[in-house]
Length: 316
Ligand code: DGY
Image (cartoon, rainbow, N blue to C red; front, side, top):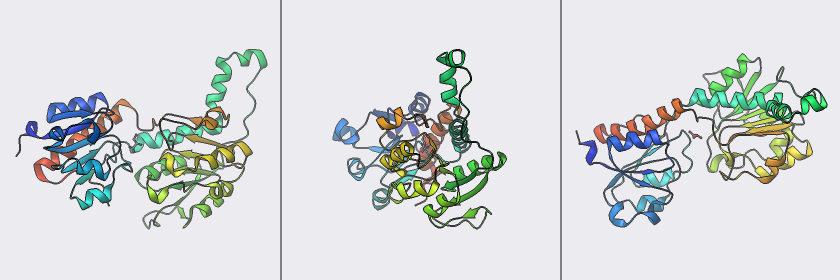
């Protein structure tokens, strides 16, 4: 069994303090901010066997670390990691599934409820003294009751969202890369068909080339004027200019968004629209869940260096 304290691991400063502390207790850690190649000398990069990070690693970064064996990614979505390049170079990639599933699903429902019930706007109305000055908050146009939900991406998180939607009395349908034989929800082979059959579209799919701008103007048109879009997947899945257009013109009713294409930048137009609820990528951001994710980042590294079998390798 190797002495873990002799194993050199690069960790990025975006990891939360709990995770960084556990990594430092376990391994010989060097911290970097953004760019491995630019920030660290070749001497420092030599001998690095593991990378733990929340973010991106491209082929260039991999090539700058000649002894790299494993990238332990903090987060279930790993679209920033060039997994094909890792595979070619024999570098293992792991992520942090399961431990965040329920939290992210809760956030999806939170966004949906807040968007439909307009709770953030109603609260702002109260805080601004308008209840007293102008009377009751205007009646909302949408209700949750009777909605038909479509989920893009019925993986672990999508399933947890589906269970919650059913509990709220919504019907559930989905579009996935593949039809799932193990569940009875209605499957639509194309996203446009799904959007045409529902009025509430919830994105729980991974980012990357396959889903890039999948929710485009055509899909939004199909969703229709009572349509609500919720995104807890990746911002890149939505064509943001098309979404702004659809929200401005009433092509869809409203959106609840936790993720954006170019974080932390949020399109100015979205910031000034009344019919959106916006949160800063917080779906998994409770202390308990982020701790569990950080522990899994560390445990994947330990398991790799002890047994060559990481706990949660990404499935590619
Ligand atoms: C994930 O796990 O991919 C989340 O988006 C990170 O918060």
